[in-house]
Image (cartoon, rainbow, N blue to C red; front, side):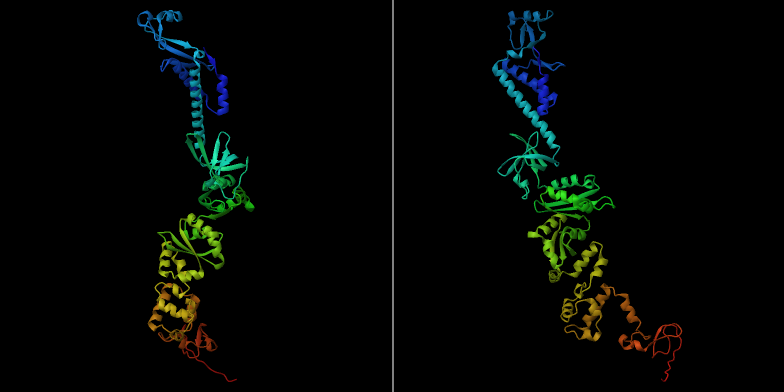
Amino acid sequence: MAIDISDAIRQINQERGISEELILRTIENTLLAAYKRKYGNVDNAIVRFSDDKEVSIYAQKKIVDGEIDGVDEATEIDINEARELNPNAEIGDELLIEVDPRNFDRISVQSAKQTAHQSIREIQKDSLYSEFKDKVGEIIIGYYQREKNGTIYVDLGKMEGILPKKNQSPRETYHVNDRIKALITEVNKTPTGLQVVLSRTHTDFVRAIFELEVPEVYDKTVEIHKIVREAGYRTKLAVYSNREDVDPVGACVGLKGVRIQAVIKELEGEKIDILKYDPNPHNFIKNALSPAEVRDVIILDEAKHLALAVVADTQLSLAIGKQGLNVRLANRLCDWSIDVKTDAQFEAMDIAAESRKAVSQLFGDDEEYEEEISRISELPGVDPVVAEALLGAGIDFIEDYLAMSQEELNAVQGISAEQLESLQKLIEENVEIVEEEQDEYAEKETEEEGSDREAETVPEAEEYECPECGAKITIDMTVCPNCGIGLSFEYEDE
């Protein structure tokens, strides 16, 4: 007897989203289970489906001579009964005999039902698992259903998702039927069913929100280098552009801050710092400590990723942040251990200038380093005793030292002439003297080499110009040092 099951197939397909092929396989397994329950654990049952979705079950039986060998009703049929169904039947042949499902007893039918329900649940679980497994890392929208032990259960349509307490932002509170946008982080099979784990604290949740709000991030014109976050408080993003004409920070902020405000609204007012990624650690660390302004970054140990950021006194609390949050996020963003100091604290640390120069040379900015040397204590290889003695006399900067006369330097207590000579050599090797200062002294030099410069310097009132070449001459000269013409000075009475 054939049974029309087309309507049932359509209904299961629409309600549970199970394919027709899987439904037909489930029906086949159900009928086979009922047959085995009725006739014993035999494998001679065959299920067939017609093009019109009608199903029939047959028993494949061997033809025997019942009067001689006897008949096993489950697997055999007597030759006389077989010839009633097929006149050409012979002993040893096999014959398909249709079985009426209505002849199955109640226990067989109940067993078949349980098998069908179990099969449908497994098929539905596998189907949903495949569907949601492909969505890991994507945002999904659901609705608040209930809460138990801090875990929120979210209606996702086809199934329920869970939002654990650790994956919830401390800023957020929910009520029944509230709309929840979250990131799918895990999809697991459990004995009780499929489990979809959601999160609103994951850094990829922020990344996915920016992909929705910023077209340049979605099409990879602007890429996010790294995101660090303490959910509910502050998030830092390092971004860079693949096109020179696109500002990565401006693209994420949007016109008048429209885009960033949309992200902040989704995160319930969480602070967001967007900064430009730079492969140079000096610049990247400066950017990472935003919104604070960093004056200088000193690399203490490049191998161990130790760095020192120097800020003004007014910027110290801003750079560190409340409970150290800002500098802590900057450490994670740059993968450097950053210590923040003020100018006074940095000077008290007495970091070796030689180490600073070596690190600056490592990063290819030795010229910048030399330009930054302004204090005597910063000179590489300077005698600490000399630097301390000069500082005690009020001489801290190299510029002040060069402006002093030899007599004034000799008057400084605790410094010998040899030490002053060594210091002068260090200054000449490491500091570029401004050209104007050199010209001023050169103009006052006389023809005799090795003479004392100050002894030959004359007041400006006694300087004249050579009538031949215009060079500067003094009253005690008899020959112009520039053109060699003889000179003669005459005084006129008033």
